[in-house]
Length: 400
Image (spheres, rainbow, N blue to C red):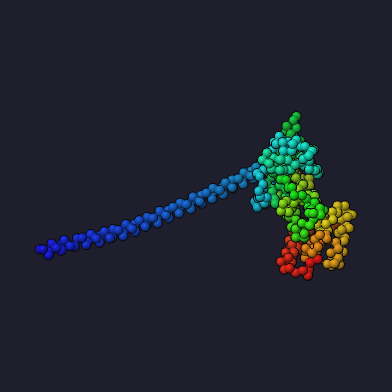
């Protein structure tokens, strides 16, 4: 009996210890499992929240896109179909303020009531004034006097669509103001278009001012001409119908602080009359001619960049073109005598020869033989690739 009691006294504590050990292990495993489940749940919850926010942002962007399209469709047939403009093109111009509609008072305050000291010039479309907005932003205000009757609503829709067409190589539109006649509030008399202000001068200044001329060596000149060509390509193909007849002369190529080319005074399409379906309705048959005219103007620009001569009259252009044609036949020595002396020694002969030949093609009297804007860009890009290869190789045997 004593042994039996002793056995009873000894064995129960052993079982209790084993049970406690099993309970502790189970408790630990349970806690670990619970932590894993909770952590997994938190990760899953975070992923769901992030995904929903992303979907919400995408939905909001889609709704804004639909709203933009609906605003365009509200007019019978808008001058410019923004649905044809890729989003990358619309956002090509970075750092610009949102487009807005200005009041006449704001325009007058910005220009100091169109003070003569702020007058910048005049072209076929209207007068241009320098202005300062309330926030200090410097702008250029173009005054378009309307010679035909226009509905303010129709004009506004055209300007709203035009405002979406911003590009790195265009002087972009920041806003507009439509003014109506006091005795005819349903008839617009004037349109003020507010542009970004480019203050670093025109390409003409850089090619004629001896202090600035030395800055533009051949690589810089090539970059400027390619920029101008890209701006024209955008005007031709980035909108429907395209904008042609853009007065692409050397005075209208502005340069910013980084020497990026920006086309100014390009054609602003407006409806020709009340109820007009398209601002180019009467020009659709001549679009091909207008497109080739822009190519011709680009050829003049190339000629001026190559020679440094500001030929403007037809006789001067024909003479320079003939000199360039002869120089190609004579080889490097002949070409050396025609190009701008300030860029000698800064270019590869093949790069210059390609550009000269293409400039001559752009200046063809037969418009059907002039290249397309895509061909222009391809050849200019090839020329600059040759130049870059020459620069990196350090091969001085082909420089002039």
